[in-house]
Amino acid sequence: MRAFDLHAREATDALADVRVGQQAYVAAGQGIAFWMPKVAATTETAATLIAGLRQAAQGGLAKASLDDAAATVTDFGTVDKRARDYLRSGQPLMAADVHLHGRRRGGRHRGSPGRGGADGSGAGERRVRVVRTQA
Image (cartoon, rainbow, N blue to C red; front, side):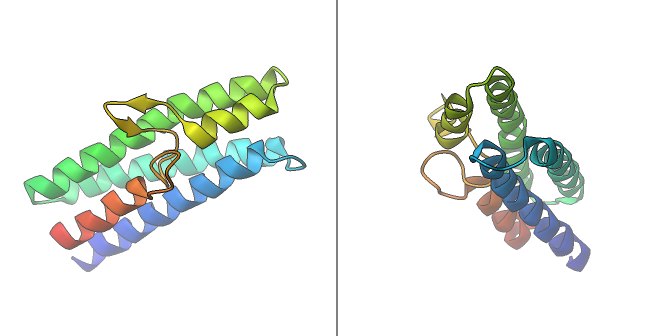
């Protein structure tokens, strides 16, 4: 159980780092050459950690929560690609808007894994924390 908690904490930290990184590379004056690769690598780390937690989870609710967290990270990758495309085409305000608001699918915001979209709810991080208590 302690190893599971440690990996859940690492996944939560990775999601928070992705959230910070995505905001940094759409902010004026920040270096996208630094932040884009960092966000990509951290997103991959979060996905890997969540997949490992999913395999180790024993309860059905924990597995479902981790499936949802993995879907959120996958959706983030799609939204993040759109923001990067805007940045490459010289449209930083559109890139920031994509990350700020994300896109609604299935009634939920999918703009950021760390905050669950525009409402700042922390849905991605919260799913991982909930799993720690259920596993």
